[in-house]
Length: 468
Image (tube, rainbow, N blue to C red; front, top):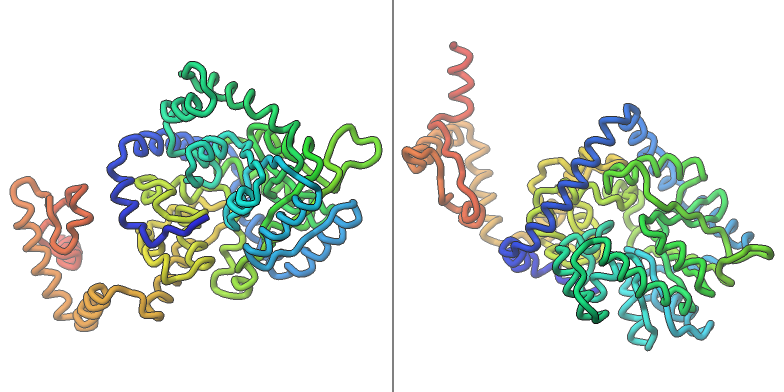
């Protein structure tokens, strides 16, 4: 997937002016946020589960080599094969090699963020393979020739009318008008693809070191059909998705859906352990797991290791006011929202992703809802620090910060400047008490008014309150 993060500001302007995007994001966010809130309130042990999940992830990351080797041994014992991909090119070549060896023509795919990360679809299509996304959201954006805008709801930015228009253009026939009709149409179109597929590619929500199993979580059952009906099943997963045991899967399952979609649990949780065995009624003849590093091992033992705890639930972006205003495409790569604002700079470079860490308001909602307690604001601040150290901060911004520092290091000057600013802004607010235009902040005040201050600084109000 092409990185377009350098165009973040231009994409934001376009997104803010799109009424369809605003409506789609508003409706979906309301369901995700309200659903999570209700379910968390009804589970008294939820905070304890978050602590346990954090500790399990930290333990795995501290012993990642051991668990990866154990997982490989168990996969091999079950008749499967593990492939190690150091980077995106390795991952593409490994999967292309499998498809070429088995003479594949048609490939079905379940949802896999890692395959998006390594640009797998583009590589397969360039070699002449027919690739069909089977997750409904992924299928919709494939028809629209767009990347995902959310990690668990790829077509969250599309309204029902827009989906109906896409289906009419792709499938022909009369335009459908209800969600049920659209889902049925997609199901009928995709059903034939499952039986024709030579290779089925899925992601892996968890990789279980104890058994060598890969686990996928879906609400549609498309993952089951993708991995059981094709002759070859290929799992693509980051090296950090390992969990020690089946019991640990149950722990994360109690957090994943509640945090991401506002459900008690997903509709389907499917375990795959090796290829078809004698007597099995279905299943693939071959089972492959492609473990992708692509920069993850560089995060181990450093300030960004906490990010490797991420279980890809999407809660951080569901609750992010910035994501909720601009959607996922503005971020310009696979991972949007707060988690993408950390991962994208680490994976593709600080210089081409300058705006992502700096777009965050550091309000902390992402950390508050993260099921594995990733300190996202702290990581974003660290990225800003590294950008500054690398000389990537715009010159005007650097000078402004230097001026602020000069004033802030001189308490008397700082207090005098605050008093002057408070009184000037109060006067500028006039009788209505609000500022339609903020000096040096036109981009912010162009879309909202700022309540004018009372004409006193915080310290002045504090002392006045003490005297009362």
